[in-house]
Length: 302
Image (tube, rainbow, N blue to C red; front, side):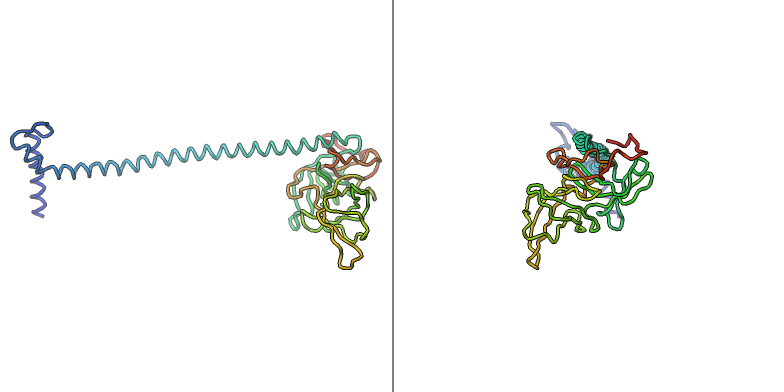
């Protein structure tokens, strides 16, 4: 303890003497020069320690400012990303609605169409039934065909005043009569496979004219789906084990995983076949019949 006090006193004495004998002068005289030589290590150590403390506290001050600045930048970036995503959603919705409007324009003399938005899916088997935001209030009824611009979607199986339940084409309980567009051959019924990306055509005659890449359209047989609307494309044709029949795997024209808006064919306005060109390759089928049912709501029409 005594040694520490003595050393401290000596240091202060040296500093005092240097201060009073020309410390800080370029040309020191007297005892200043030797005292400076003796004291310079102490001065250097004090300077380093002082600079280190300044850097230490400056680091925390600057780091706090950087964190605050980064937080502001992150907030700004998050807001920009949010609005960018909103813009993308609006652009995508406009694209889908534009396709629906174009389809309606191309088919306004063929079908009485009602636009509807999907507001729910079956929670037990989500990819096989959907709920629409339109119902009997606008004239919708069971067994009306549901379509999208790309092709067939399914048919209505239940309605309430403001909603309708649609059995999708991919459901195993769903079936629709089809025809091969290129050959006009009518092989039978296409049924759902339980998957959202495949349909099945089974027990077809071995003589059937079918090949991968051909387009399958509705045959028009029955009272629900009119003729000539796209169902999908044949992906694979293979023989059954019995050697007497064959089956085909069909890729649906509609992407059921991304389906958000649809159209319900409230009535078929003409008995002719729907066109299958650019405008009709996006379509669905509807119940045959005359005008629209009573009770329709013009605001729901496309």
